[in-house]
Length: 317
Image (cartoon, rainbow, N blue to C red; front, side, top):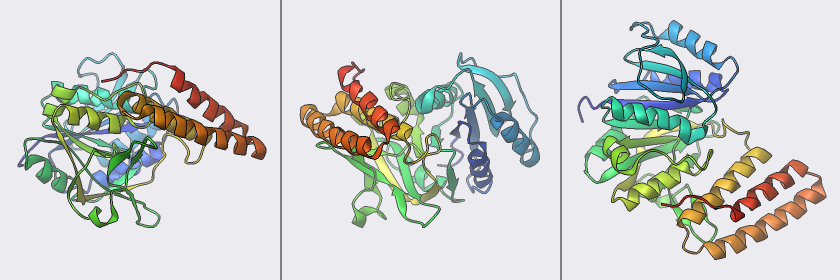
């Protein structure tokens, strides 16, 4: 486990204040062999200036090698680069997967042993990396490991590992209560905190980009399992997750992207897809009626737009 190189990938989209809090928490991490790769996903606000200011005020050990970088057509500019922190800006908003795929590309081309996907709306415990690393190093077939995510508000568990409920076509991201404090093999872990072996990147490839938001992490875990890799949940690795930094919790846009991604994922993997389609269509119909009565037209529009995904072709593994 000693001296394994980890690239921590963080995507920022407009929420620079969350990103800075996440970076501050990473300063306290006891494992030191990591580089932070920040992708600003074409925020078009003050994110770059704010993050750069934080780097200059809090990270002064290395010289900025701005302009010295690897080739990736999605990057519009390199704002900061040294041995510990990299900050790039993209040409457009590539979504969760498209942005993280830039850092995955960098990790492979620069011989990192692992990449750690980390949401920018998280705070980390100082020793959160070590349990992940110990578990993933313990078995050559363990390719992806995730930890326990807690709510900063009340300390409740908001993310662990999960298994699919194929009837509803929904990923239950909270495993059985009696196993929440046990190391467990699962079908998927959350991309808010996901440690991935370099060998997985080589055999499975990068994150699927057809979702844009949500379910990319679940899809990637299923693709990894299809290649023979094991997925594990490690409860000793703890972070705090604010959730919904990319879309507002409870908003019509979040409902659309979640439902859209849910349909796409089930089209790819659900052997009981017809049953799922009937179930979700009935649920959508009831919700549309309810929202029409309540006058929530943005939600009606989001539901109808998501429902149309049933008619579209999607890529399958």
